[in-house]
Length: 370
Image (cartoon, rainbow, N blue to C red; front, side, top):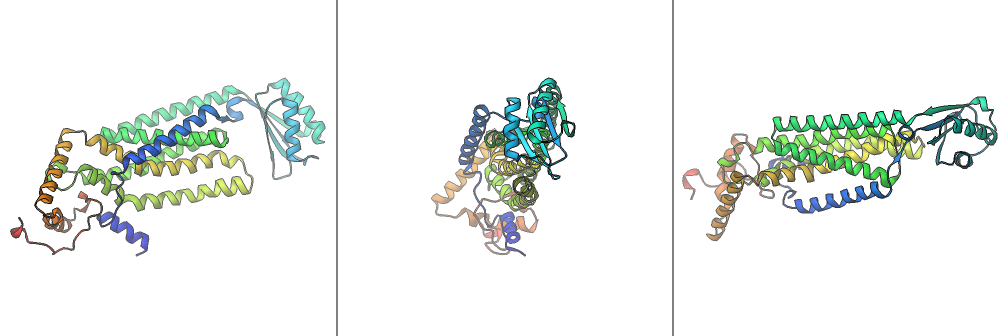
């Protein structure tokens, strides 16, 4: 077995682990800071909406221009009075995108481009895009997002419980906010491809969250019938038990997206790939983070407000305090219970992080227990 696979098995068994739940206030603080930065980025810098949302004109040429891309950019800006995006096509031609121009202005710009580029006006193709089309796309995207959120909450509330549904919803909003904030800070164009990317990352984020929730649901089945582990400790075990799986799925998903973003968009200059690849890259990373550091800790916080779970935690802490006062080890008293759990294959009941399991057959027999 590989080192990573061996680590995953040890995490699942509770032999090693990291106290994610115990340090949840740190993760909350980090997430709040990142979210505030993202919101400020949107408020201060704003989103660079593409031509599909603002409306405008796109000019393309089939033949190579007599001037460079940078010179064509200057000509387009001077002719239109608006910012322009100029890209060189594979056949040597140019694609010039200018927002917020009407038909009359587009004809004037086309004439000036023909003179400056040294290309006959008949060989410059002009396509006009109205802002109403972009508005329809945006409205449909918001409608789709709203329906998706409602369905997610309903499904999780039925399959798990309403606390998990609320935690998952907060994690999804967290992911979308961060992704939109990165777009504002980086200045990439927001196009229909961006919207598709945003909707896509919700599924990835939800997948990681549901995996942890499923483990947590199984581990907390009949939790009030025992006095060994609190809800937070079992939640922590659930995160550690699925940690390697979450890392593997996220890395495998990020690698091809990184290729699109950094090689396709950066090295090869295929700017249209940036539309969807940046949202996918940031969203996948944020989704993996939120499922581990946000969603599950929120569930633990909400659950431990319940009277039964709160009373259970009080009993467990009192038991441990009494054992410590007598100089006894709670681990020794629980060793036979753990061995029985192993024999019955109920390891998913959870274990306190950092407490190693003992091999079967060790410890006192039930008749010798204090």
